[in-house]
Length: 182
Image 1 (cartoon, rainbow, N blue to C red):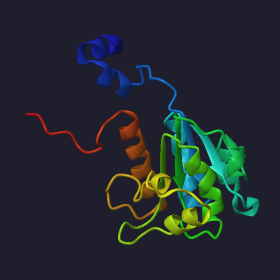
Image 2 (image 1 turned 180 degrees about the vertical axis):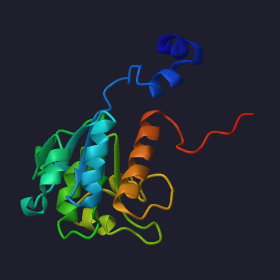
Image 3 (image 1 turned 120 degrees about the horizontal axis):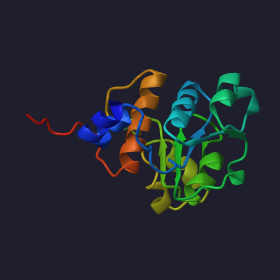
């Protein structure tokens, strides 16, 4: 009966019933800097088909929950292999090591790179990356704010809006509600 329903209603229904192919590998999701948002990003990112990586230069900040959620934990950005299937989310813009950690990531030109922060003022990543010799053209590839505009404030809401935006971008969609049909 379920197969008939899936066939009758199309691929969207089949996906909702867990019967459809989930498509190609989502790629790699790199959460930069351990914290509450990073832990949720990694956990839910894995559910969305990502290979999950936590980049945290200060090992003492990495919790058991981070290690459990990440497929890989690294402490050096130069050790990462980023490509056109890598999405990078920087979860803390107040770190003293922001420039040295972000510079090699930005220079690697991943599919998507963004940093959390308020859009009301210039992000500290501009000065931090300029101090590392990163060109303004490359700095401009860093997205800020990140995620869909859902008014998120709590770590899980921030992770949800960010991952929804990444899935929308990956699927070449705007991320908004489609027009209602009657």
